[in-house]
Amino acid sequence: MPAHEQPDGLPPELLNNDPDGFAWGVWHDRTPKLIAQIKDAHPYGPAQRETMDALWDEISTGRMQPLKSGAHDHDLWAAWGVEFFGKPWLDTPFLWSESYFYRRVLDAVDYFTPGPWRGLDPFEPMKAAELSDPTLETDLQALNELDLLPPAGQGQAKLLASLWGNRADLGFRIGKQSGSLHPETEGLISDHSAQLWRHLGPNAHVAIVADNAGRELLADLVLIDHLLEHHLAASVSLHLKPHPYYVSDATTADYATCLRRLSQTSGAATTIASRLKNAAAKGRLTIDTHDFYCAPWSFHQMPNDLAARIKTASLALLKGDLNYRRLVGDRTWPATTRFADVTDYFPSQVAALRTLKSDVVVGIDKETETKLDASSQEWRTDGIHGLIQQAAGSQYPKVHQPKDSCSLGSGVE
Ligand SMILES: O=P(O)(O)OC[C@@]1(O)O[C@H](CO)[C@@H](O)[C@@H]1O
Image (cartoon, rainbow, N blue to C red; front, side, top):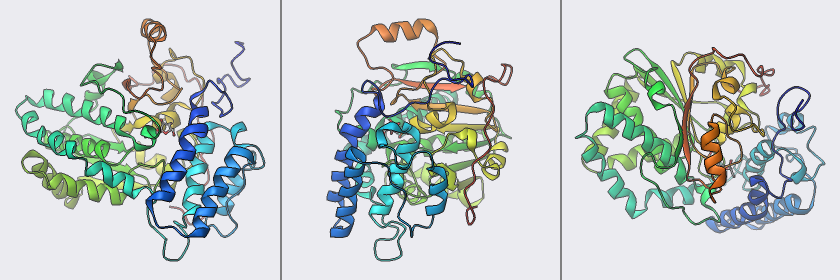
């Protein structure tokens, strides 16, 4: 057995404690800046500020603590965190601990606590700033020219816009220069888009598991409209986060805001917004969510009720880096591992649209990997490279089986 493999045949999970790993920078550089930004963004009182500071102390010098005892989901997290609580944050898995960090931020700012701060999205000012960026108007006006292309060309352009919209992730930009943006296909290191389109048609039901609000969600909405308008889908369900997460992840409130923003730009954007509202009114565009979308586990542990809903889709389109980590497992997979091999447990046909922003990647051919490794680029994490991957089917042997689906406790749908 190769040295990097675990006895169960899976490569090890990515942890936080590798100074050369991507997670190291997240905890040492990005997290303190993010905590400072949240404190700056709202007129929080001393208790909330002290809790935020205490969280940073705990992460940087202490051991991971459970949620405060009054939290509605205290018991759930107590069970989920049993093997991690009491350990230094750096010695825990990257996927698990990052998710828990966002849960602790909501605790610190009283997001779930009955009282005046309940429901205030700590990341809202950062999301709003993106939607008021003056360059956004020009980008939305460009939709008018797109209308002049033949439908297939429009579709491909909108698919790529939805992919590259994922570059605009706000959490990722903290502490980084915004990289030079490549138009269209430059930077695309794996492209199964031709295969993806084959799953679509007048009777298709598409589930889009969204990632970020702002520019990315706007691009997703434009793509959804295209699918519905051009008979590439009979219906689309847009899966959003049930509460704020990973800074810019899209919630229902963000969806409503993005639709409003679309309708504020005259021409094609307004037309798209009104078609989408119409599709929503007719039940062709539905919104879905589940607490599991903010749980710290990979999709192998997707609860049965969510899996049953996803299973109705002809194709599930998973957006972004975090959904990719959860789909393939946040592990040290060799980059040449077949995408189909690590995703065939998923309840439906699945495609990933992802800008690479963390260490994990699969489905890259050897030649491409060698070329990228030889370049001076940090191609796995620089937020510039992207992929569109789709498993051709389940003709490959399963590399691993789904684990037992996770329990979300009582009171959760
Ligand atoms: O899912 P997204 O929005 O594309 O990316 C989320 C992300 O920015 O957050 C993590 C770092 O905090 C990384 O996994 C990833 O780069």
